[in-house]
Length: 270
Image (cartoon, rainbow, N blue to C red):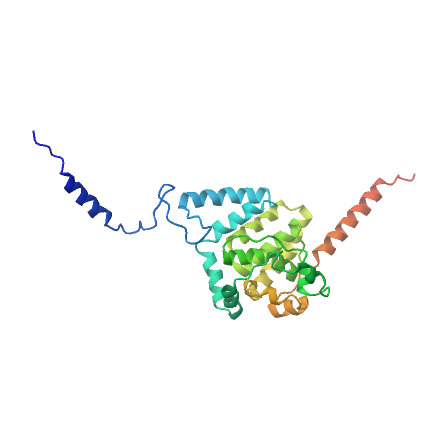
């Protein structure tokens, strides 16, 4: 009986022929066992299932525990790519200062900034106001620049780093950058106390939308060159109008609760 299997030479030729065929739409198909090389140092290529799992997992953990900076960073990266981060990059490329930032690639870290010098600046300069907020760097550059600039956004808006202030700032950043993570972070408003939630919807959300849309794109601010700038002059140049002082409002609210508690604890005179 003759064998119907092709000769080894035929199999080899068929293998080479098939391997040379390009299947349309599958050039980026891969699995955990067939992962393409990274585009840059530290880059981890993800397939759709992995990206979806990271999105859901990091999103839930960030919502339940806003102090998990690692999960917030992961959530911002997964939701920003591959579409929204390009819009932010194009905004930088369309701006002269933005192009300089992309060319120079400065970092905002505790080592790149002279904190002692910043503390010595006049009280109302950007550097003196922002020195309270400087945090550690991470992420790929444009998104990294956005995240490292977050503390300066606190400085120019005057919003505190309490949960209520962070939600209001995220609403401002969403209107200004359109990054999905910032918009989704606004959902944390439902976790605020009743008075804070009412204040957010009536005061800080309208302020955030109005100022975020009309202000210059804050991603294009070369913060390192603005440290000695008067904070009010910088706000005027960027088109940012500070919201009602949240620290003062919260302080008055605490004092009112304290007085009400003291009044309720006083013995009734018959």
